[in-house]
Length: 95
Image (cartoon, rainbow, N blue to C red):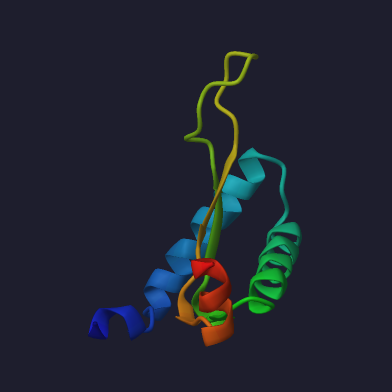
């Protein structure tokens, strides 16, 4: 369980940022837009559960299924650590 709460090294963070820049350049999505997407997703999810927005990872890759144009479509991947789900939210899900 300890590995869930481990912080990324500065080297890993730099690698991740470089990957995001390269991918966003391929799909014409600026880093600013990626940050806005990340902020919006965090804001919506925070209404329903407590998340670790500092360690969430949002990426756009081109590994999706092939589009009708013969190329691969961009796909949004999100890795969002969930810290807690309120008991009342869990009860609603069980009903």
